[in-house]
Every structure is written in structure tokens, then in C-alpha cells.
Image (tube, rainbow, N blue to C red; front, side, top):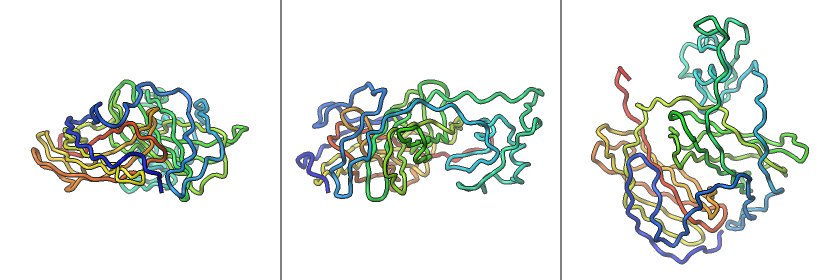
Length: 333
């Protein structure tokens, strides 16, 4: 278990915001997180806050983003993959992918399923008879990752920032572990916890787990492997997080609870709150996504949330909250 970080001090913080990340006011026991994020990964101290934590086998350093590999023939579906996203990624048409795989209902696709990406010229021709251009990578920057070796694997927490452009959904991040010679030791993909990423939004949190835990690695590299233009009408962000209470419950366990009010004109369903703990360098040291009770909120009504987090290292200097849900679409949307 962790050593006690702070004396047990309940802090009642009134917060409000519609569809925005909520931060605690400055007059709290926590120090504000720095606004600048280091360009290189600063390895987290050896996790000693839980009995299961062990020192990392090596000091990982970020590597330059690799040059994209040639278009593969077989693609293994990952969480967040869509046919539109794959078509844009590989420069082919959605129809060509469907015909090559006999796909009649894309909703039946499952993560781990392998599909064929056709390479024939007809598949790569656009409607005007010209080759379909390769998609422009989204302007997403991934900050330094915080690693923690636990009994159930090697965990890595991170944050992605969309600097400009339109909102995105189905954003998937890949993290590769490399040895001293640059050979890949392990690779994992994971979607962002939030469903929609807005430009310049201080959120974009994700967590990956390498299991079994790699015995050692020298450095890592991270990149975005999927991102689609968001269908904004489907996402509900008119939600205000209020009456937040954060407590050091002892043994380095943090308890956060509060209310989420639907301040929009439409009902929201599948409502959830993303809670992130940050250290003094602004790196993610604890992360959870929890559904509200109830998950469906009518306009003007309020739901509740409560979550426990154990940071992978101390001290905790700040936190972020983001509430989001979904709308029922009309036939015109």
C-alpha cells in the first residue's frame, strides 16, 4: 500500500462548466500543474506507493515518430476502427473494403478480426478517376508518458492534445517499447478514454497496459494510428460538473465525488466522467472513467459520480474532470 501523502483533509470545491474540462481552484492543498510539458519523457520514480509496484527495468526515453510502414494487405481491427477511418488511412474506398471482405453490416465487425485491404488500382481510385490521396495526419501531439510496473503488467498513462482543426472521434494511440538497438520489444494500442477530442482541449487521456510485463526496454515511441472526424451531433457536452469533493482517504487513496447536471436542451445517455490525477510535471499519475448514476440525464436534472484512484507515484499536484454523454439522433442527423 502507499505511504500516506496528505493528512485526511476533505476539500469541498464548487465547480461548474458546460462541456469543458474542470480544474480545481488554486486555493487548495495541491500545487498548480505546470503549463509547459517537457519534450522528452522524464521517467517516473520507482513506484513504491503500492506493494505490487517494482522499479522499471530501464529508463525509457521517447523516440522519434517512425516513418509509416507500407500499406499492409491484412489489417487486424482494433478498438475504435471504422471502415471510413480505414479507407482514409490506406487511401482506398469503403466500397472496395466491403466487397473484398463481404461486409454487409459494418456494425458486426469485432476487435481482433482480420480484414483484407485491397491494393488493386480500382480500389484506390477516387470518384474523379484520380488516385485517392493519402490522409493528412491529424495535428495531435502526445505528451510524455508515465510508466508503472505492476504485478498485472506494465502500465503507461498519457495525454494527447489536438492543436487545431475539427473535433475528432475514434482516436487510437499506439505505444511501442524498444530495446537499445531500436528493435521492438512490445506494442499496444488503446483508444482515448473520451469519445470526442476537441481542439485545444486539456484532456485526451489514455492508458495502455503491456501484458505480460516486458522484462526490460530502453525507450518508447508513441503515435496516433486512427482518428476520424467527429459526428458532433451524437456527442453531448452540455454537462456541468459541480459540488466536487476530493479527499485523501489514507494510504494514498484519493476519493472524488460530485454531481453532473444536464444544462442542455436534449437528454443525454451513457453519461460518464473522466477523472485524471496529475503530478508536478503535469504528467498523468492516475486515471479512471466512471459512469454517472443514473447514466441517462434529462435536461435540468442531475446525476452523481464517485471514484477511487491510487496514483502510480506521488505527489499529486492537480486533477482534471471531463463529463460527456451521447444524444439520440434524429433521422436528419
